[in-house]
Length: 149
Image (cartoon, rainbow, N blue to C red):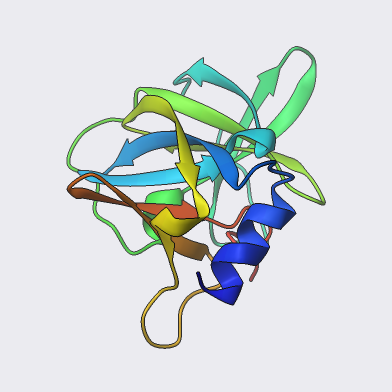
């Protein structure tokens, strides 16, 4: 097991070498976030456009009286969207709560540390590791580094 994979599991507060992930699809690929960072999943609501210093902010929505910035994850990852987003995943980072539009939320998945591999080459601040789940690869995203400028 790699050092990054081990630290990913420890950082997520897992026990027994298992970690639960919320798996979602975006531009025909599978991505995941640790379940502890996902506060809720809501139906897609078109965000209201705003001017922002962050180039990834699509706009904002109001959610139970709170303003939530909506980040364009597809653009951040260099993906082109084929269809419309159907859900927004509300994510808690160390500094804020934000939303990311996704094509759909697929499942909550439990993985073990031996299913995780480091990214080849330089890696990415947005992606922690890759989970091998059967014959598919799921990119485990890093909520803290995901939208760092």
